[in-house]
Picture 1: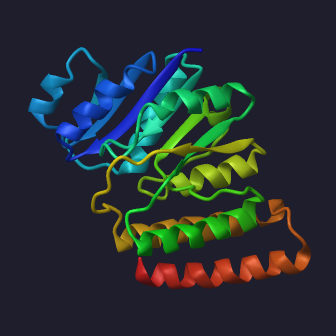
Picture 2: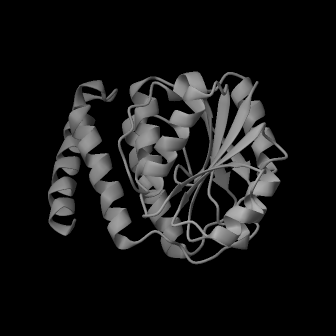
Length: 243
C-alpha cells in the first residue's frame, strides 16, 4: 500500500519540522501545504517532503482539499491528514493505516485529552449531533488526525475552506455509506487553540446546511427527522446572522 501524509500548515515553526520528519518514518511520502511559508523552514525541509506553498492564508479546508487532489493524481492507496502543531504522536499513523487495511474507509484519531473544559464540552455537543444525524458512534470527530482509503475519499464531495472541513468529511462519509472507525491517539502536548468563534459558527452553518440539503437521506424515524430539521433550520438562521 503506497501511503502519503498530508500536513496543512500556517505560521508554524520548529514544531512543523519535527512533525514532517517524524511522519516520514511511517509513510512513503509527505506533502506539506504551507500558507505564508517561512523560507527558513522550507530550507530545513528541502528534500524531506514535497511542499506546495501559498503566499496568502487559504484556510485548512482549502489546503486539505488540495492535498487530497495530490493523493488522487499521484496514485497513493491511502493517506493520512495530520495537524502541523506537534500535538499528535505521529507514531499512531502505523496503527491507523493498519485499521484501514482491515476494511474501514476512514479512521479518525480519538484524542486522550482535550485542551480545556470548554473544548471538551463543545466537542461532546458536536459529536452528539453528528452521531444523531449519521448513526456513527464517534467521540472525537474534530481531532485533526485522520486516515483515508484513497478510493473511498474520492467519493467525498468537499467544498469547505476552513476548520469545518472535518465535520464535512464525516457527513459526506455518511452520505456515501462509508465505514468509519476511531483509533485512540496520544496527545503529547497541549497549546492554545487556533479555532476562533468565527470558525465554530462556520462549522455550525456547514452542519445545518448539509442536514437540510440531505434531509431525504437521514436514516431516522419521522419524529426525529422533524426535530433535526427544525433544529438545523433554526441554527442556520442564527448562524447566518452571526457569520
